[in-house]
Length: 430
Image (cartoon, rainbow, N blue to C red):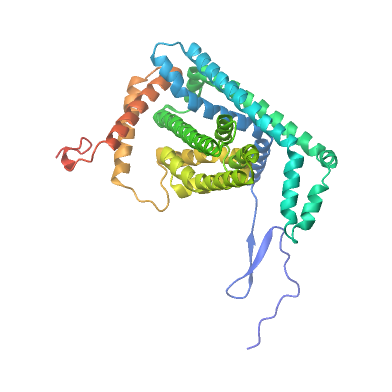
């Protein structure tokens, strides 16, 4: 039987379609059509990304201000519980913080600049000693000769543009830091109105969860600040003991400077090593080498052991998550990304838990059922107590209910397990 005759001309395929051979050998046309709604969504996403990139400095200032609010809120609350007016308590806290920062700067900056001035005066001597050491080997003799012929005037002329760029960057960082401090002050001053506005735009059925999220965010920020204080104190104590044993001058000032620089993950140790090693050069090459090696070893110990351990406990994060979050934050946003990586990671995990998001590989546990039952009970109690109230007063009630429940949960976690589950109050009676 002869095969069927093929048509003389192939049908035209509209633009935006694709031909796929069917099982019977004939092509099947699959259309890819972009609807108006999809186009609008794509344009909205592009506009959102563009707006985010252009307003990133302002958003970072807001994030830093919120971190300051979370860090200072417990101190202000402690003063309020002792019958101190909120405005006066805020002035005391921010004033004391400003005086403390100025005192640390006055104690450390002159010492650091003094070490730099001493190094500049001893620079020819140090350079000649290094050149003599390099002359001892034929492989490094050329480096010794080049080191002797260094001309600092040419280096300064070539690095003028870099210095101006760095100065402008430092000025912007200082300006943004002051803006974050003032924004944090005004956020704490207008706490009730801002919280009422936030609760006003959220449906009342979700007020309890919102209040729990806000309380947990405060806990996360507090844990992060405690971890920062602990690691900075450990770094300062190590530098002080090391320099005191080695007989290096200005040990206390350099220790305070090193503890402050330890706020910056990964690069803080290198910013600290410069002044510390320069100060150790006055004690000879042996002491300088010992200080350099011990500082480098402590930096590795802190990054790989202390930070995952301390922040893992403070933020309830696994050590692997802590290490990966720091690495990811540094890769995406540099120093600021490293500073904000841990609280953001803890906040994401907290939101997954508080919003009861069911993950694909997770099965429903009995404790999840009990949590949902308690959520329903708290929401009904809130609706009863906050009926026909303004948003600001309703927000205060929601925070109170969530705080009481969180306190009960903390006490239940600390209490020993009941060997007889029938005595548990959450178990229904037979």
